[in-house]
Image (cartoon, rainbow, N blue to C red; front, side, top):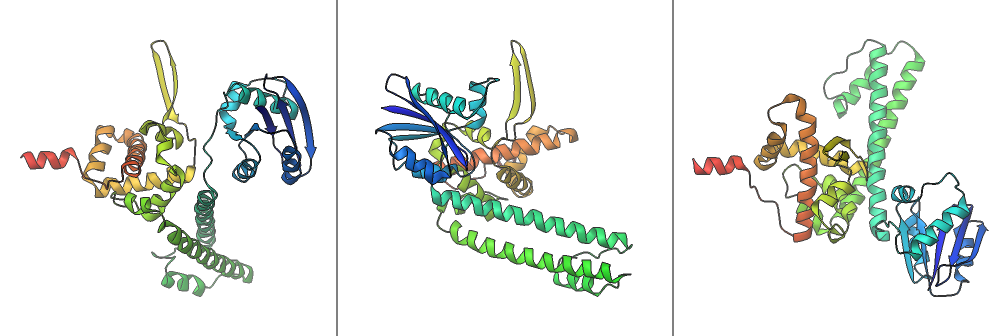
Length: 344
């Protein structure tokens, strides 16, 4: 079977073809969009395997290539750079490297979710973007009020608070116009968030794992659906520790001989999930004796370790969520606090 390395770009792509013995048969650059590339690849002698680097739209390209190729592997960009370090880099060289790695079965692959799962993830990220936009508008409104020495009442974003905002007399017509525009923008963004959350609610009802994760104290539907969407298939993680690495909640490590330095978390993987799970960890600390006991054990009574303990608790919750999705069991309280009270 032939192997093909593919360096993909939107306006032009390069592929390198190796035969059964690893000898280069052809290296060519195709000008045009992905349809032109797919038409060119369809004319290559079958069967063949193909590898390309993950980038924007890799899921769509994977699905289309899967129709014409015997095997399709999507390479992890970060790991790929670690394997091949060279001062000579261009599209032809990248395609040749991918072809050689595929021939040797050494491509560092990434998981490719289904089209439905990819759409779910995009909608979750779209909601997160709308939330950030809403926060920016709120900050502009606060800045406008402070620039005129106006102190906003509590509950500014409630209906009563918005009515108070619109009733304020500002010094100039331009300030009043800015206030009205920001108020309209805030209402518009909030309406979009409501629409997105309705769509997410409908999708979440199709996945039993969402309700299962909501049995954990402090985990709401938005956190549960994000974790289910990004874990997708629990069996693809060989251990609970791999889940933490995937979501970037493990520390950077620099170890050599008897020296072992641990730094900040890697922050790899989806930032949206890290943010939501961290928020859920705070709620879990308040609502669950088990989660609170874990947090306190990591903190060791030291206020300076509060952030470290929170990140560790978020990591712990993710491992628990993976276990629940894998086994189908619901959350059970197993804290040392409750055990000590029972024994007493």
